[in-house]
Structure formats: structure tokens, C-alpha cells
Length: 252
Length: 383
Ligand SMILES: Nc1ncnc2c1ncn2[C@@H]1O[C@H](COP(=O)(O)OP(=O)(O)OP(=O)(O)O)[C@@H](O)[C@H]1O
Ligand SMILES: [Mg+2]
Image (cartoon, rainbow over all chains, first blue to last red; front, side, top):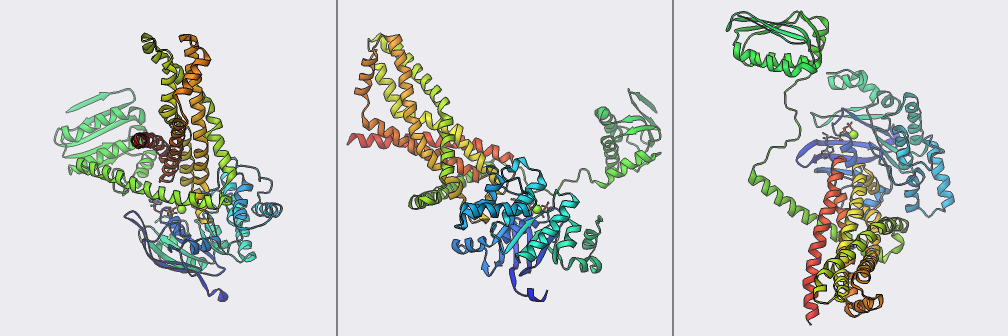
């Protein structure tokens, strides 16, 4: 990981709150160019909250988040739009547009940001859907798909513009082991293929080891990071019972 | 003391002196279906018998479900709260299994849910006031943002999603035709009929035409159409946007760099502002048609005289003010519908609240705006 020395996401002293309820306190970490970075932790510990801060949907209560050197809490709309064009997001509840067929869902950002002809757009959309094994479902509406298929369609849409950064919230949820393993390979190949930095929220142990290069583990009580590093090393060497329990699927 | 109670499927037997060491023997089944009885029986024991120690013998217990186990644990807690030594004996493995299961959950300990303390009266009034004030502020800033976005769209017509405009025009207009037709014809009929009863006495039959056409074109047409559109489309706007908020779809739009106002709201507002005035004229016409039926059939007027009377009564100015009013109403109905949609927080249940609120607020705003129009027009006309 020597050539990954450039940080693309820098989080410093982030405190995240909903009204006056504090979810994260004074969280700092970095994500480096091209790495597969995993955020894990128990249910309700604030992983999705952190992710939504990283993509600038919520403003930090205090602290800074720099994405590609741009302060994501900036009020400069132009900069913000520029920053956002380079990221693709899969939300935890897929967030496909229910009033549009799959094809339209994936084509939407392409139509907005490129001058490509409809013929080329069609080829790109089909290719993306094929990548996530959804070829042939172009004209299905999200409500006509299974949960796992919607997740994959969400990934296809997130990849529409070949973003430099992909944020995936629980991409493996609701997938059978075989499809999940296929997704592992897909995520790795997207990462190496288009060189996208990946920030992935997940709980799926098998996929954490198959995909993750570096993880941070959040904890609800600690309201912050309790472990950081290579998942394999963490599993072997961490002395923190919360980390040990997580990696060994044990309860406290 | 011996006290034995026979019930259908369980027995409680209290052995031992009152105030002394008590052995409670429970046999039979304790399940959800007889739980009510069991809790009644059990509750009295620690208080009335006032034992110095309580031992519960479960040897004869045939079956216990989780809610039954909960009742027994309650007994234990109650005894312990009175610092009475307490013990279960004779638990077989099944019973022990289910009791242990319940030990893992701490029943009764209040969850550390977000604090929602019951507010006092003054606090509630204050909170309600704050809410209204806050609502007003957010509504104003929404209106401001909406107007700037609309101006931007006017300057950049290519940025508007015209296919979505068409879809919304169909939703607001075409799909709304049947109900608008029905209501306006009926309204015309009723107004003509009721007023004719009065006017006939003075031999002023012909003024039915004036009355209906003035009332309809100047007031009722715009208001009635706007209220119908609020019910049909304002609520639909709120529901559509609210669902998208809940589903993170609006967040997805934002991260893709789309402005939700431009993407979702502008097409709806344009559609409403274009369609509602037309719908209003259409409603005016059909109400007059309804009243014409009464005039011709009930009052022996000819179609020609009836229409002539209307032409004398109504001038372009009246039609124009009605038209402009309905433009404003359309903006209000569409705007408040979308705004309520964006205000949705949390889960699907708040989408329901948002749709209701969209309709109620829209009707309120329509009436308010109409009153303002009445005053302003009054002063304009005097000049
Ligand atoms: N919009 C919101 N308003 C208020 N509180 C929220 C909101 N969203 C999340 N929370 C609270 O923030 C905490 C963290 O939520 P978050 O969704 O980030 O958890 P998570 O780690 O993603 O959990 P999961 O693994 O179950 O998805 C939760 O306790 C939740 O109650
Ligand atoms: Mg989550």
C-alpha cells in the first residue's frame, strides 16, 4: 500500500449529532487513494450517519471533512457540485427512483452530466447493468425487483459516471452467499479496474476479509472509533474484547 | 392456613401461616390465555399474605409460556421489593429454559430511548407556538428558494424536465376532469335552484343567471377548483416527495448533483400553474351550464336570454381576476404540497401526516389568499 499515500478523505475531529443527541464524538481518520476502506460496527452505532456526513448530506456539528481537498461543509455550491460529481453512492435502502425503470435510473446521471448520444448511453447503461448481473431487467421498475437485485441496481447507478470514489452502505445485505461472493469479486474488480476509492459500510464478516484492506470499527457507547487497521491483523492481534467479539461472532 | 383455588387449567395453593414462611404450589398450565386470571391471583399474595419468606414450587407445572414466566418473575420482583426472601423450586428443564430466557432480557427497565418528557400545559402551548413560528420561517425560506429556482428555470427553459411537466399536467388536469365536471355542474344546478326559489317571488327569474355566473366566475370557481386540486394533487405531491425523502431518493438526487427543487418541484409547479386556471374556466363554464338547465327547465327562460343576461353581467375584468386568482391558488397548492413532502422526517407514517397537512394548509392558504384578494380588488375597483 505504499503508492496509496495520498489521502482523498480527511476527517478531523468530527462530531455528529441529531438535534441534541450525539452519535459520534471527535472522530478522525483518513482514507487513501484507491483503497478499499471499510466502516464496521454494531447496528445503530452511526455508520450510515458517518457515511452521510462524508458525502456532504449532513453538516458536521463540529470538525472538518475534506474530500479531494474540498471542505464538504462548504457553502460554495459550485465546489460542492464538483465534489459530488466524483462520487457515487449506494444508500442503505437502495434509494432507486421508484417512478423510473432501471434503465432510466442508471441513465439519469449520464444524461445530466454528459453530451453522449442516446445510443451510447444505452450501451453504457446495459454494460453497467450487465456488470451487476442485471442484464435484461432494463425495463423493470424497482418495485418489481427483489431486495438483493435492488442493491445491485443501486451499485450500477452509483457507478454510472465511473466516479473516483464509491460509497456503499451495506451492499451485501440481503444477498445469498454465492451472489455475495460474486459481489466481492465485482467490488474488487471495480476497485482495480477503474481505480475507484471505496468506502464500504458493512457487517458481513466474510466480505470484510475478502474485500477490506483497512477498516475502522465504530462503537455505540464509545461514540467513535475503537479500532483501525487491516482486518486480518485486527482479528489476530486485537486485545479489545469488543473487536474480538465482533470478528468471532460472539456476544459480550 | 389452607387456601386452594381450582381453575380450569391451573391451581395455586398457599401453604403455611399468614405472615410466616409460605410455600406456593403452582400446578397446571400458565399461558397467555389464562394470564389475566393468574396475574390477578398472584398480585395479591405478597401484599395480603405478607409472608416472611416465599418459596414457589413449580414441580407440578405442566406448561409455561414466556408470558407466564413473565408473571412469575413479576411475583419475584415484587417479593424482592418488599425484601421477602424468594425462591423457585422444582423447576424442570423446560421451565428453567424459559425462565433463563427471560433473565437475559431486563424486563421493566425503561429503554434509553430518546427523551420525550410529557410537557406541561404552558410548555405545550409554547411548543405549539414555536412550531407554528418555525413552520412559517421554513415556509418562507422555501418560497424564496422556489421563486429563485422558478426564475432560473424561466431563464433556462432547457433545464426544465418537460416530460415530467407533462406527466404532472395529466395528473392535475386530465385526471381531474371528471370530478371537476361533476362538482361544478352540481354546484351550478344547486345554486340556480336555491336562488330561483327566492328570486321567483320577486319575478326576478332572469337574475338567477347573474347570480350564478358572478358567484362562480369571481369566487367559487377559483376556490372550488383550487380545493379540489389540493385534495387530488397537493396531497399527491406531498406523498410522492415524502416517500422519496423517506427512501433516501432525495438524498440520492442531491449526491448526484441534482437540485431537488429544480428536479422535483419545478415541473409540478409549472404543471399546476398552467392547468389550474384552465380547469377553473372549465369549471365556470360547466357550473353555468348546470344553472342553465335549471333556468330553462324550471324558470321558463330561453337559452338565448339566459346567455344574454350572463354576457351583460360578466365582463372581461371579472374573468381576468378569477383567472389570476386561480394562478395564485395553483402556486400555493403546489408549493405547500411539495414543501410538506420535504418536511417528512423519519418513517412512512410521517408521509401520511404530510399529505394531510398539505391539504389542510392548502385550504387555509387558499382562503387566506382569497380574503387578501377581496380587499385588494375592492380598493382597486374603487379607483
Ligand atoms: N434522521 C435521523 N434523525 C434522528 N436520529 C437518527 C436519524 N438517523 C439515525 N438516527 C440515530 O442515529 C443512530 C445511528 O444511526 P445509523 O443509521 O447511523 O446507524 P448504523 O450504524 O448505520 O446502523 P445499521 O447498521 O443498523 O444501519 C441511531 O441510534 C439512530 O437512532
Ligand atoms: Mg446503516
